[in-house]
Length: 143
Image: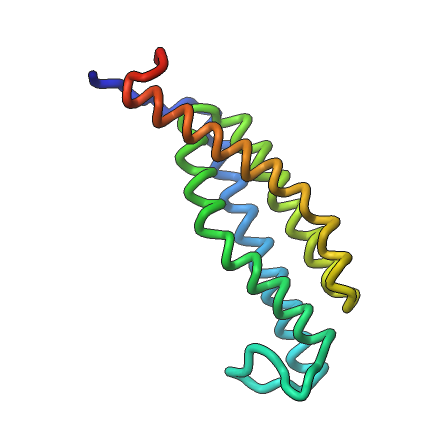
Protein backbone atom coordinates (compact mmCIF):
# COMPACT_ATOMS: atom_id res chain seq x y z
CA UNK A 1 0.00 0.00 0.00
CA UNK A 2 1.36 3.37 -0.97
CA UNK A 3 0.75 6.42 1.11
CA UNK A 4 1.27 9.88 -0.23
CA UNK A 5 2.97 12.21 2.24
CA UNK A 6 2.30 15.91 1.95
CA UNK A 7 4.22 18.49 3.90
CA UNK A 8 1.89 21.21 5.11
CA UNK A 9 2.77 24.86 5.52
CA UNK A 10 2.75 24.27 9.27
CA UNK A 11 6.01 22.35 8.83
CA UNK A 12 7.59 25.82 8.95
CA UNK A 13 7.14 25.67 12.73
CA UNK A 14 9.23 22.50 12.81
CA UNK A 15 11.96 24.21 10.79
CA UNK A 16 11.93 27.18 13.18
CA UNK A 17 12.36 24.86 16.16
CA UNK A 18 15.17 23.09 14.30
CA UNK A 19 16.88 26.47 13.80
CA UNK A 20 16.27 27.42 17.44
CA UNK A 21 18.12 24.34 18.57
CA UNK A 22 21.25 25.78 16.92
CA UNK A 23 21.08 28.72 19.34
CA UNK A 24 20.77 26.30 22.26
CA UNK A 25 23.92 24.42 21.22
CA UNK A 26 25.86 27.63 20.73
CA UNK A 27 24.82 28.96 24.12
CA UNK A 28 25.93 25.74 25.80
CA UNK A 29 29.20 25.81 23.87
CA UNK A 30 29.89 29.41 24.85
CA UNK A 31 29.30 28.61 28.52
CA UNK A 32 31.76 25.72 28.30
CA UNK A 33 34.28 27.95 26.53
CA UNK A 34 33.93 30.62 29.24
CA UNK A 35 34.45 27.97 31.92
CA UNK A 36 37.59 26.76 30.13
CA UNK A 37 38.98 30.27 30.34
CA UNK A 38 37.91 30.82 33.95
CA UNK A 39 39.31 27.54 35.23
CA UNK A 40 42.26 27.50 32.79
CA UNK A 41 41.37 24.14 31.25
CA UNK A 42 43.27 23.60 27.99
CA UNK A 43 41.91 21.71 25.00
CA UNK A 44 41.47 18.79 24.44
CA UNK A 45 40.72 17.99 28.09
CA UNK A 46 37.08 17.05 28.53
CA UNK A 47 37.15 16.69 32.30
CA UNK A 48 39.58 17.86 34.93
CA UNK A 49 41.64 15.73 37.25
CA UNK A 50 42.42 16.64 39.94
CA UNK A 51 38.73 17.19 40.09
CA UNK A 52 37.28 20.59 39.13
CA UNK A 53 33.67 20.07 40.09
CA UNK A 54 32.07 23.18 38.60
CA UNK A 55 33.91 22.95 35.26
CA UNK A 56 33.01 19.29 34.95
CA UNK A 57 29.34 20.13 35.61
CA UNK A 58 29.33 22.88 32.98
CA UNK A 59 31.05 20.69 30.42
CA UNK A 60 28.77 17.76 31.20
CA UNK A 61 25.62 19.83 30.63
CA UNK A 62 26.88 20.59 27.13
CA UNK A 63 28.02 17.03 26.44
CA UNK A 64 24.77 15.48 27.62
CA UNK A 65 22.77 17.69 25.28
CA UNK A 66 25.02 16.74 22.37
CA UNK A 67 24.48 13.07 23.19
CA UNK A 68 20.71 13.34 22.83
CA UNK A 69 20.66 15.92 20.02
CA UNK A 70 20.68 13.51 17.02
CA UNK A 71 17.68 11.62 18.41
CA UNK A 72 15.87 14.91 19.05
CA UNK A 73 16.47 16.08 15.47
CA UNK A 74 15.27 12.86 13.86
CA UNK A 75 12.15 12.68 16.01
CA UNK A 76 11.38 16.36 15.39
CA UNK A 77 11.90 16.35 11.63
CA UNK A 78 10.17 13.05 10.85
CA UNK A 79 7.30 13.45 13.31
CA UNK A 80 6.76 16.97 12.08
CA UNK A 81 5.69 15.62 8.70
CA UNK A 82 2.58 14.07 10.26
CA UNK A 83 1.88 16.46 13.13
CA UNK A 84 3.93 19.63 12.62
CA UNK A 85 2.42 21.80 15.34
CA UNK A 86 2.53 19.10 18.03
CA UNK A 87 6.10 18.20 17.03
CA UNK A 88 7.14 21.86 17.14
CA UNK A 89 5.59 22.35 20.58
CA UNK A 90 7.31 19.18 21.79
CA UNK A 91 10.60 20.45 20.37
CA UNK A 92 10.25 23.79 22.14
CA UNK A 93 9.56 21.90 25.36
CA UNK A 94 12.76 19.87 24.89
CA UNK A 95 14.83 23.01 24.15
CA UNK A 96 13.44 24.81 27.22
CA UNK A 97 14.17 21.78 29.36
CA UNK A 98 17.80 21.73 28.20
CA UNK A 99 18.21 25.33 29.36
CA UNK A 100 16.73 24.48 32.77
CA UNK A 101 18.88 21.32 32.90
CA UNK A 102 22.04 23.31 32.16
CA UNK A 103 21.24 26.11 34.59
CA UNK A 104 20.70 23.54 37.32
CA UNK A 105 23.96 21.79 36.50
CA UNK A 106 25.86 25.09 36.39
CA UNK A 107 25.21 25.55 40.11
CA UNK A 108 27.71 22.79 40.80
CA UNK A 109 25.00 20.65 42.39
CA UNK A 110 24.31 17.88 39.85
CA UNK A 111 21.00 17.04 41.52
CA UNK A 112 19.61 20.41 40.36
CA UNK A 113 19.89 19.31 36.72
CA UNK A 114 16.83 17.14 37.31
CA UNK A 115 14.58 20.20 37.10
CA UNK A 116 15.09 19.89 33.34
CA UNK A 117 13.65 16.39 33.20
CA UNK A 118 10.34 17.72 31.82
CA UNK A 119 11.95 17.60 28.37
CA UNK A 120 11.28 13.88 28.29
CA UNK A 121 7.60 14.73 27.84
CA UNK A 122 8.54 16.39 24.55
CA UNK A 123 10.79 13.54 23.46
CA UNK A 124 8.23 10.87 24.31
CA UNK A 125 5.52 12.82 22.51
CA UNK A 126 7.70 12.99 19.40
CA UNK A 127 8.45 9.27 19.71
CA UNK A 128 4.73 8.43 19.80
CA UNK A 129 4.14 10.67 16.78
CA UNK A 130 6.86 8.79 14.89
CA UNK A 131 5.38 5.41 15.81
CA UNK A 132 1.95 6.56 14.59
CA UNK A 133 3.58 7.86 11.39
CA UNK A 134 5.30 4.51 10.82
CA UNK A 135 2.09 2.57 11.44
CA UNK A 136 0.24 4.79 8.98
CA UNK A 137 2.94 4.32 6.35
CA UNK A 138 2.73 0.54 6.86
CA UNK A 139 -1.05 0.63 6.53
CA UNK A 140 -1.56 -0.83 9.99
CA UNK A 141 -3.69 2.13 11.03
CA UNK A 142 -5.81 4.25 8.73
CA UNK A 143 -4.12 7.14 6.99
